[in-house]
Structure formats: structure tokens, C-alpha cells
Amino acid sequence: MSDMYETRANIYNHIADPHSLDSVLLHGADDFITDSTLEKLIRTFKEEDIYDHFGLNLLEFLSLPCDVLEFIVDLNRKDREKDAKAVEKRLRKDLDL
Image (cartoon, rainbow, N blue to C red):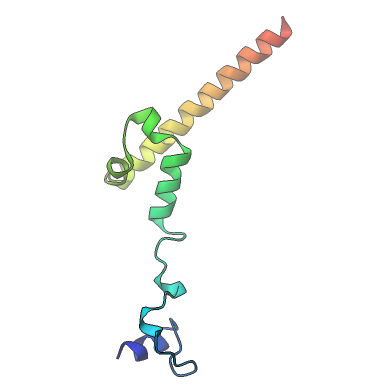
């Protein structure tokens, strides 16, 4: 029964390529992490240094509602932009002296 489903769903064609280990092989359709919302959130947590800025660990971050996650990430990005502008301003001032 599962062979028929996998063939019809284009997961694996059991008719064209019968194989004894088909049911335990990893197929592309089994990869639910790549390009998923979970992967994007984990990358955002790492790239935005959420732990350093807010003290949230990964599990705490992932357990927050989506609107709160968006707010935290937006706030963090705005703060980083503001800090970068302040550093640039200081550097320009130091170079002009």
C-alpha cells in the first residue's frame, strides 16, 4: 500500500525501479528541514545573535509566537543598523581630525 502511495505521489517509483530497501531509504521528499520555516528561524537566531541581545536560547526563541519573533528580529536589525551608523560616524569624525 505504501509503495503505491509513494509511486503516485512521485516520492519514489516502485514500478520502474523495484528495490528491497525502498521503504527505509531516505528520499528527497523526506527532507522536511531544508528550506523550511524551521531552518530559516534557526539561521536567523544564529545570524542575528539573538541569545547575546535578548538572552533567549534557541528553544525559547522557537517557542514564541510568530508575531513576537518578527518583532524581535526587526528590533534587533534596527538596533544593529543604528549601531553601525554610530560607528561609521565616529570613524568619519576620527579621520577628519
